[in-house]
Length: 498
Ligand SMILES: Cc1cc2nc3c(=O)[nH]c(=O)nc-3n(C[C@H](O)[C@H](O)[C@H](O)COP(=O)(O)OP(=O)(O)OC[C@H]3O[C@@H](n4cnc5c(N)ncnc54)[C@H](O)[C@@H]3O)c2cc1C
Image (cartoon, rainbow, N blue to C red; front, side, top):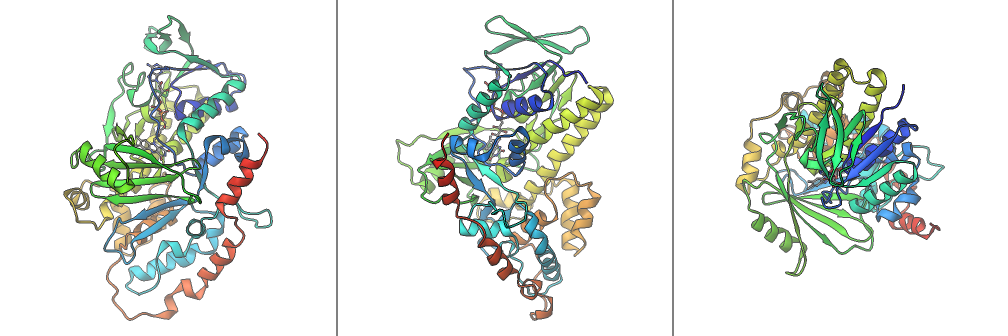
């Protein structure tokens, strides 16, 4: 196929990730990225899923090259603190699922099944999965060469530095960078976009345009008027207040998501600071009250600056419209509880490249692509909604409204119904076509983590405790011995010559 001339509008994480993937897929394409120097990037989005690891592998950039420049740390998963006071434990971990977990997954699933039947057996997610064990020990998820399992992990990174790093490499690889504000958009007679006209008067023409302009949706919304479907009925959060704190000596290999009065707060440990942000619902808490709560939690003084953000949760009806594809915040956003936005960016671009190569944008191709991306986004949405539905917090109107919310998407109802009827969760997920990023073990972590079980109905029976029978604790402890402390790995990276 002849590669298209591409113009990417926007130089946030979405824009530069898109530039790299397209440069990789279409080495001969003319790719230009235009970004307005006076319109800031969103400046948050500092935790990833393992998809970012795959991205760097695809574009051929080693961790030792990019991680020190972005003050990045390893991320083995997320810890949820204080989300379910009625659970027998104050927190649980949702680690990234790795190849090693194949040895313990059955014990976890069987114990959960027995617990759903009323038997008093261990079901805490942290006890079954390697990533959780590594996080608990502050270890980097980097297996030594003699330990033959592929690890899945994500990263924490400074978003601004990552953007700058990706820009420099993309430009070195031939992507043309224009620092200019797009003020006008010209269109062909058939309605396709023809060119972006900048404040310097330059008209940048292309066959394909990628809208990475953030929440503005400069092309997908302002030019093509593609409708936005809000998820506000399911997800109430629409604002955040963000503040850094000093770095810690031994950064954790997990994001911590702590439930607060009207939302939750992330803690993302980087090498040079900790990123913190309180995500809340403006219908339940004012920006001032949220800031006060965050300041008290972090021990900030008056001179410490915080930043307020608003966001809209939902998705475009269509992400590929005419000769424009929307990627990143312009295509939609689900609140960051599972840090899935860049994962969806990568999914979108990879899917787009595949569909474009096959059909170059026939209506049928666009339709199939849009359907796939919508299913992916909604799969993530349902998992996030489950957090709010299953919460057992009752200490504010916000938490009570979440727990009482009956506006649940059908696929989520099916999953919850299957779980509580003691049915086969894997089968329920298969019925949904595997669109979700979250598989059976992730759902077990969430449901078990919230203590979503019926009351124990029998005396304990040791013949059904697969955790003890298979000595999962000893197995994980043995595996963890193979992994180095995160701070050792980061120190070794930084010591390498640039
Ligand atoms: C509170 C919060 C927390 C988040 N946490 C996470 C997380 O932990 N993990 C995760 O994966 N994601 C997270 N995200 C999402 C993540 O921040 C974004 O997906 C990511 O940064 C990509 O943003 P973007 O590139 O689409 O938009 P932006 O960063 O907003 O970039 C938009 C770009 O468009 C340019 N632009 C706009 N208009 C014009 C114009 N007219 N002319 C020229 N240029 C223009 C701007 O200059 C800028 O370069 C979070 C988001 C929020 C709101």
